[in-house]
Image 1 (cartoon, helix red, strand yellow):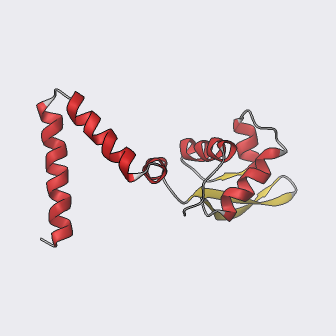
Image 2 (cartoon, rainbow, N blue to C red):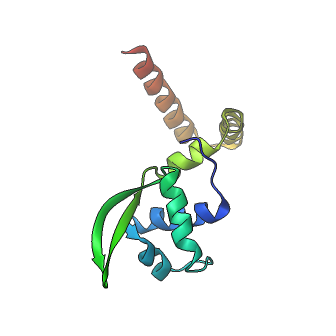
Image 3 (cartoon, rainbow, N blue to C red):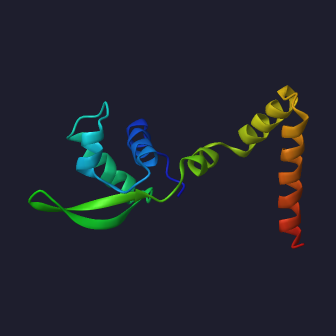
Length: 122
């Protein structure tokens, strides 16, 4: 999933993340966004093509069947994927330099050591 997404696509994806349940296009329209109701189906289709959304199920909506979508990636994972390795390294460096809480720094140290052990196969 290396596709870059537009601001409109990101806006719609945020609606799916915050809903925490599968949504149809009409659900997204009902929730409301700055996008027009004619733009939302196109944006959802693009997110589906780019594999950021998948069809969860199909349900009856008024007189027609509608696809109900769910995100294939969490908001947290999307943010991490969106950042370059260098910017992540800079972010962690700045966090560590500006953090004065020993407990938080110990927690990060433990997480790093745990991950290192997993990679070593211990």
